[in-house]
Image (cartoon, rainbow over all chains, first blue to last red; front, top):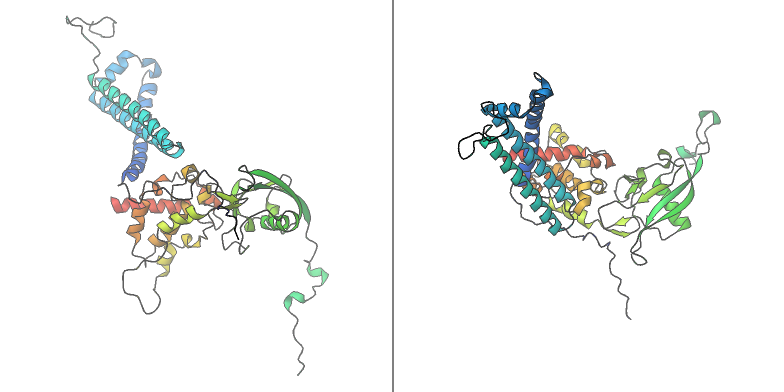
Length: 156
Length: 260
């Protein structure tokens, strides 16, 4: 007697097996979780302080021009403030998008490439921003030692 | 001896003025059931069944009526039918509930009542899903007492305060309503899921248990508690009213305070 073999029905998309690896991968996810909370709290202070100083104090929004920004970056306090804001906001945002990619990318290859693009963009913005904050010069000179045209520099 | 036997309470005729015994109102409901039969088609379809039900009936009664009187091929799980075994978790009107605890009169009966299998687990037929991934992660957190001390000759004593610490998470009936309501679990099914964390919580915070550190280490995984996004879907779905999201947060804090 030949019994008809009926395969156990499974709805293709999710395999019933967990693909989770047994080994724990350190504390990275915990650190990332903690960083999101801490950086979030610090960012609230930094961003609202930034908005208050730029938009409300003194002449408010009408005071913002090249000279205003140059003046702020001449002060190490505001250099540090903006640097902290840049790094924390970028890492906070990047970690958030990393989480979303991990959750929603369906294929390992698309997850890899999305994260590669994300990390590259983050690195470019953080490095460029840091360079700008530290190497900013309101009166750039040309090779002959003459201020470049543009009229930004009050001494020109 | 011919002592008169007392009539059982249920058989005593109540006088009319006491009330009760009146006819229970009936109403028509349309049950829209998600049907899937892999031996016929890979596609799932909706089937509508119109049934006349009583005001005291639950969704499970309507499903029984459909299966017993209209279409015997409708497949679903149920065991105790009284909210204890956790077999009949399903998605009713888009929300995870136990069919045996959901009264029809509490739903909008003017519109069809949709009944679907719980999401995120492979459907086997109609409302039956493969629970194996769910139980696999449940087993991984070692949901049993591990005690390194000598076995006592009597029971293991515990103060009322120590018992209270994990009381909420002892109520779990493993119906999978929480895990299958979790959007993170829906994405790839690799997340441990609320139910496994709840059952780990039940032993992590048990003063008689000695393996809390091991369980915390297991849940510190990439797919562990840190994937929780605190959307509270699980707390809302739990038919036993367990504060699932709070239990997950407590496990997160326990891991943090152990590492730092």
